[in-house]
Image (cartoon, rainbow, N blue to C red):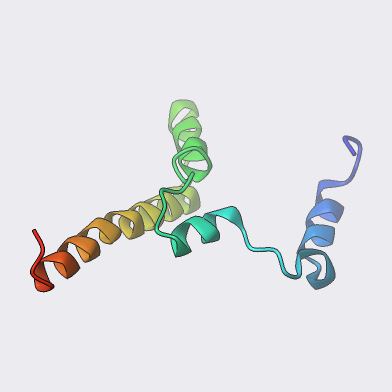
Length: 87
């Protein structure tokens, strides 16, 4: 596999019959409101880019969006608790 053409691998993985029924682990985390691995995945690419002076705007944006979603879970849970007579 190491000598495989990267574009062929991407095309293969994107085929509906290959990816059918698979749910990405990050999507599973978001649906369950669990912390994601965004800091280690896209956030890591952003950090390496900054260290090397290479712009990574897409990874920066994806990281910020997922982190904002994660942050909103605590606010939603907190406001639901307050509106239902909790702490």
